[in-house]
Length: 472
Image (cartoon, rainbow, N blue to C red):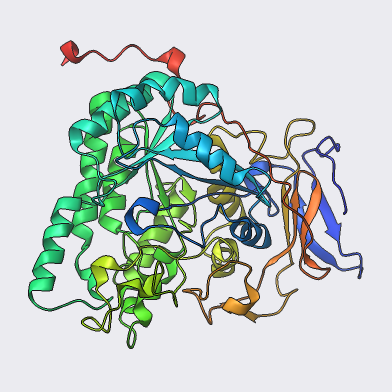
């Protein structure tokens, strides 16, 4: 394997990387992290084991992280999910470590998914920090995971004390369950009604409520996979007031629409995710604008694949003789996207290279306590994670086909999309692990767990005063 040492003397100058096979430039890199075209990539993922049962295409399977490497992602932060039956978070973390150890092509860490904030679980937040975990996720929807407002406040308060970043899936679960019931009373079951059951208003209300709860406790939050322009506007308004509200969006909200759920037969199930893709180009434009103007801190994949042609635990598990087009409320929510995230977004040419690297890499490293080990190119400090791209026009146009991807899923929601770039090389800790023209995935399961510190974007514990209810 080729090796690039992180101690190499890269200064604030441009570095020209040339192909070994030709004298023409393969890509231009710069050492400044905010403007590198070849940069570390960090991504998050949603796993709903509790809601949908075992997921054979999970990112914690080796092929999931192999797919990440092949798409230019060097570090993943996946979920360690606590169910309603689990009282401890530390046991969940231990079990997830066991699944990942010696099994990942990428470096990795975990978000603790809190589904049951018992007094024991809350008391373990400090121990999580000591074990290198500095983020968790909670849900305002999904019966198997949904927390009530008082439970959310319990989590936010203890997260504030321990310097943990809280991620929130913001949809009004009670109202969307009611909407689902109303649709079923009318005999409306097909995949397209998944989007109907989750209108933008439900995401907007929950987003506003999450901001309110965060403001009450005076602690930072990250609102994840935002799809709605009106929800984004609430986030923007909070940010302009100086509130520590951060936001994430994903490629499906830049490229897909609800019409992708309305395909013949059951095909629309391939694009069922939550929140659902929205109405059309105007919604896409608003989300792109949020990326451009800083409303969205990070651009992740929300990679949560389920095998389509699987009648037991995959997308087709909702099909029965009574419901030949499926029953949308039982379609496993989630789409594959970790390998296509960066090529799709770069190819769209809607972001400057500086902004592209910022939202796909540097901000994630800072937000999740990985910077400057990840998300930067600092001699002797950073891990020398790089992604090298082709120069404009240097690769030729390629259609995204599932057969060219490296995940363990039988479809991609972006089938047929044209891209004019793909990572030429992915380099993890100085080792070339993906060589598109020289063997493909040439790395092995050498991924390491990365301990994370406190977010650089939050309010640090030493700057806080103890929260006091009597102060209101």
